[in-house]
Amino acid sequence: MIIKTQVWTTLEFVAFHAWKNAKGKEAYLRFKHRHKFYLKAGVFVTGLDREVEFINLQEKIQAYIRKKYEYKTGEWSCEMIATDILKQFDLDEVSVSEDGENGSTATRT
Image (cartoon, rainbow, N blue to C red; front, side):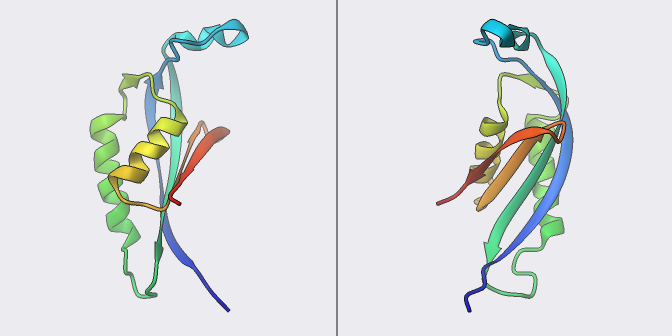
């Protein structure tokens, strides 16, 4: 049997964004609007004794989010945030959703 183990952490933050190229029935998204973003970040580990301590991982990601996204306005999408966090912290998988309803997952292959 082959077992793959992943540790993960979750966090949430408030930010504002707008989609300047929105057209048609989505045109309202061109205007700045607020979301509570939910993030789940995971990394595969080979050991079973805190190879990656998820509390430390959470603190590092949270500090980055506070500087770059929290209570700020941008043109980012869930896809952009997930990919940014994935690359920034050398993770294997990051999911980001708007208001816990719809979102995106970026996976390292």
